[in-house]
Amino acid sequence: MGGVVAFAVEDGEAEEGTPVPPGGRIAVLRGFYEGLEIPVDRDWLVVGRGRGADLVLAEPTISRTHAAVGYEAGFGFFVQDLGSTNGTLVNGDRQKRCALASGDEIQMGRLRLRVTLPGEGSCSTGT
Image (cartoon, rainbow, N blue to C red; front, side, top):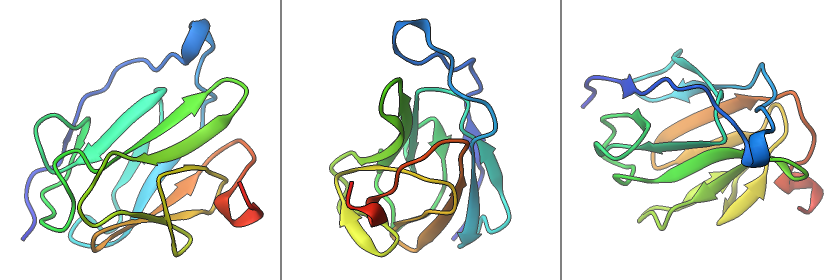
C-alpha cells in the first residue's frame, strides 16, 4: 500500500514578500507514513498522491492533488481542499477552506495529520 515519499523543498515566501512564520509542521498520525513530520515552510504546499503534488504520498484514498496547506498574510495558516474525491476534514468536519490552529487534525481519505503552527484560528472556532 505504501511507497516513496517525495517533496520539493523550496524557501517559502508568502504574498508580497512576507515570510512564512517558522515552526509550522504536519505530522502523520495514521496510515503507512505514521510518524513522518513535514515542515510547513512555504505559502502553498500541495498534498496528494500524484507527481503534481509538493508532498507526494502513495496513499490510494487521497487524490492526486488532494489539498493544500498554506499561509496568507492577514489570514494565517489554512487548509484548502483542491476538489478531491473523498474531501478534506478538519477536526471531523468537511471543509473547502479553513483557518488552522496548532493541534488541529486534518483527514484526507485514511490519512490523518496533525498540524503544529505558530498562529491562531481554527475551523472549530467558527471560521
